[in-house]
Image (cartoon, rainbow, N blue to C red; front, side):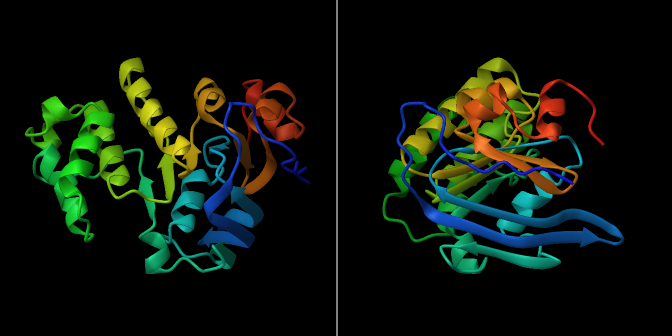
Length: 254
């Protein structure tokens, strides 16, 4: 039986927690494929704008969890509620999900960003484009075909394309996996900027140092269940669940 540790406080990073722009409540969430239960009766409330880090071993269900939150998959059972509403098209328009392996259009960097802007009726397209290129260090690459970019450049573009629509919730699936330190820094700076602006960030990472730098609270998944939901400093310094202690010690969890 898994021990669940509740959130009692938050990491001291100089930011005061505020209400989330899109409070999330999950009740009895289950997802199965075939005879395999991937997520098993998850209950979770994310009511503040704290940056939430999802951690856990491979196969814990983290990526599936994000896809369910964004409505790309449908639960086998249970409920997902954003601001008291189910995951409707209107709710999804206020969110962005960036995958570990970005999918880009066969056009330039700037055209990829302009395409995203074209999906919405915005009056400040030129300003948003300039800001997105600047924040992710993409100005010198604006006219370059997106699909000839390096892996790190493509990931920066994918994040810029998500942020240019000014989502209330940003979900990230290992956004800096296998990237060099310089690219990781640019992406982390962009994430920190939107967090300070009040965007709710929910982020998967396997990197403890990154989770310490960015995270304010940690949701730890193991074997399809949440075993710990706690402030980030508490999670790393005093993990209370057996699974979290083993994970942080570098043990193999099955």
